[in-house]
Length: 374
Image (cartoon, rainbow, N blue to C red; front, side):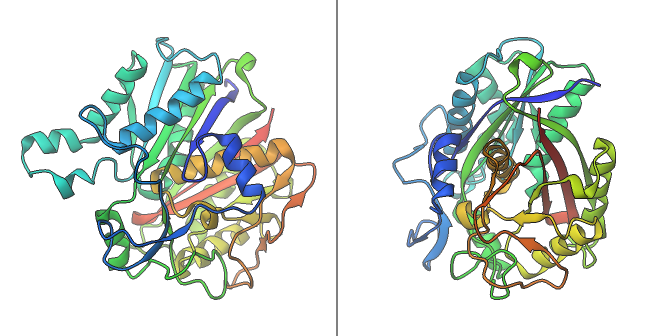
């Protein structure tokens, strides 16, 4: 099977327009989460990580969602030699909501239905860069970003493509915010993953791109080893009570990569700061024998960026691997889950070679992916 290397990446977020600027800010403990009073999004003040209003303004050609994707892909492609127009290069788009905001402003007719469809956005983005292959869309709740990376890895391993550009984005709209508010899942303060006093999710918007390649000359220090997905079949919005299903995805990933649990240096957890998700994820990590491995959640910095979350958090963890540091979990003070976890509370330094990224989402979906230094 071909090795799958990370050739380049980008994070476009309220914290910064590149991976480098994002990671530098996170090492200083700077978060993109702020209190907002935008009545176009919500009637009451809410915490979120949002772009300034003058950034990524929709125009006649591209929506905000599409502009986010284009900005992220542009920077990633500029930092490697992968050619978007090569027939051996594929494009994968990851999102949960796409252009759902158009429902709030447009007339409900056939033209709107066509414009709001994810294939429409994917084709526009692909055409902007000259991709010759039909883009692939991954939209599977909050595991979309990780699932897109795994799909890219498998497309390369199958021999169909040599390079895959994996990009994900989501924006926060009234539709999205009100949906989480209807679950009473939005925190009334910046989220506190795994903390005893956590009160729910903080949302965020952003985009990210990871360019994968089978060509070792494009390798930029990190490779994708393996990954797996599973499903709880428990409830449309509530996760498993045992964590075994996410635990299965983690243990299957380790088995595929021929890596022992104690050889994982750190875990980038999903860590949404909801009572049920954090509890389930803690049990899953313990189920897989990783309870002593340093673990963090980046939601305190970015909020939950939905379809971009798995990509953003994987990229930040890749930077952690390269610089041999593990970031703390912003907002965590005291353990609030029943299973033992080794939550990072300060910036850790060491000699790190491998990390695990996990995610879970509505519909009971779970995913895990393992990265290592080349």
